Image (cartoon, rainbow, N blue to C red; front, side, top):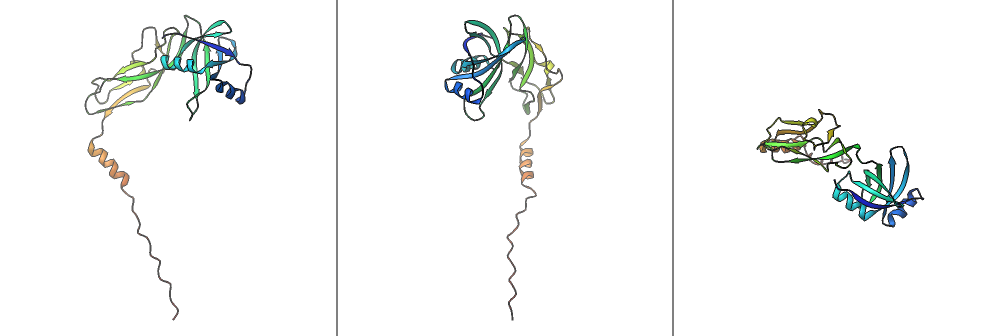
Length: 211
């Protein structure tokens, strides 16, 4: 994984108002912690950080320049606004060269299973341990030609050299099942519509007239 460099500034204001002012200035509020150090409140240039995450993925390794002092960090959490396209907050972990870290990496399914099958992905990310200088962006699982009934567990996922599994070895990642037939799909549609009886509008009985 490539290593990026970003100039970070120390934040002295805190709270929601201060965070909004930081974002209006084109920067992202961040906290750097780990290795027994006191948390540092920083601001990161938004465009540069977004570019790094786009290029490296969720586990971006960054050399932060904090007041002229370099600090190697791992992106741990990126909190985005649920509606608007901006990053609200970032958590960074202090790391050192040569150490291993636990991270979650995406699982990417490649290939085509046997005809008449349906590939269901039960796990989108898998936890592994890797050297900070060689964190995989993702791991690939091939389903090429696999038949109905085949199951791929975490222990079966091929990992790059130097990367070890931290997730439960028996957790299900990929399941190959039989694809539903047209008749089954039509039956489901019929079943969904069955049992619904539309009642005819009731005509009120005429009131009795006095004789």
